[in-house]
Length: 317
Ligand code: MTE
Image (tube, rainbow, N blue to C red; front, top):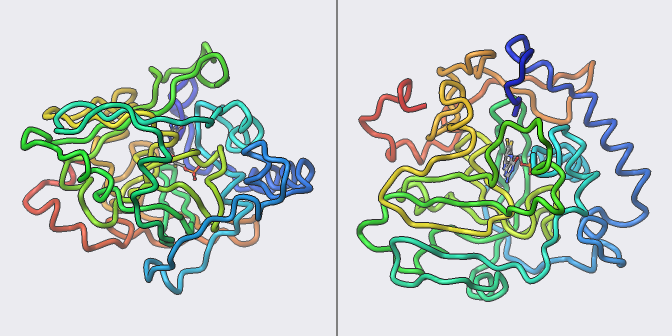
């Protein structure tokens, strides 16, 4: 994402330089003699130390995966800095021990639950999804996690629950991005879905990727993945889930409503005010191989189209 600063009106999506991937990759290689996820979690062992057990699924079968080192070193996680290589460098700032999630609002079962308890009840599986960032780059990521609907159902949302609001960790002491006085974000990071979107079978909670525990820079220990929406909806490091009858006030929508809508469905016919959304660069790109491809409606996940029947998606972008 590009924060609107004094000079940002001149920025285009080309400012998100692909070369940064290679810089970040070199940084990772230099830092790490061990597996990246082990490094990010501060574990002394090798990556196998946090290998997960999960079942494979047909989601994304046949897609060419974005290399793991790109997925884990080219990130957007503003709590850990605004540069693409800041999150991996600052990953240690995110403290994930004894993680709890507060469940609040319009549901029969509310309260604060240890993450381990919530995950224990879920069917853990791998799903390969395309991730399309609003900045017009994309990746293909093998996530490990479980269905969001399965998780939400156990709290028995009431008929008043029209939306689900998600909140990320707030930790100004440790997260340097939340202390940055130039940051225009009103922390914590908040995202939301309409109830029917949240209950759609594609909506996913990830606790891992590439068969390993989720690295901090990718939103450990648990993050949302909504593959038909721009990446900013896929909120990281979730500490609170609230059922509500009001549309949640979400971070990027509050910051620049004309640039980032609440729905944020991937839509090649609705351009960002400063760049086209008609195409995307599939990472990793290089000077000689830009890997530009056409962006597909709903990022190619046409099965969600019925959720928006009768809605003007030019207006509700
Ligand atoms: N969640 C939080 N809490 N903070 C962020 O800055 N960035 C979003 C999203 N979730 C962000 C976040 C954006 S803009 C994108 S594109 C994706 O995370 C990137 O996920 P990745 O770094 O795992 O590829």
